Length: 122
Image (cartoon, rainbow, N blue to C red):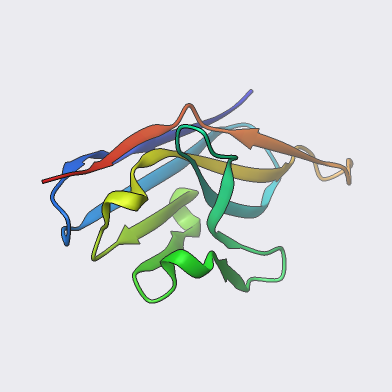
C-alpha cells in the first residue's frame, strides 16, 4: 500500500555533490519519521541522516557538516543533500519511513525503499 521510491544516485568524483530524493506514495495517515540509511559492502546498514518523530535531526558523525537532510511535507518527500563526497561514502542509500496507516490505528510500521547506488570515484 505504501511505496518509497529513491532517486538521485549515481557516479560522482570525490568532492562532488549529489542530491537524493525519496517520495512516499500510497494511502496512509501520517509519516512520523523519515531518514536515510546506507550500506556498503562488508558493513552493516547505518543511519546517515534522519528526522525524528519530534522534528529534530540526527546525523552520522562521518557526514556531519557535509550532508543535509530536508523535507517537503506537501510532497511527502525527503531529500539528502550530499556535498564534498568521499570514496568512503560509496554505498547503497536507502530511504526509510515510519508510517501511521490510519487515524484509528496508533501503531507505526517501518517501510524501506529499494535503494539507490552512490559511487564516489575518480
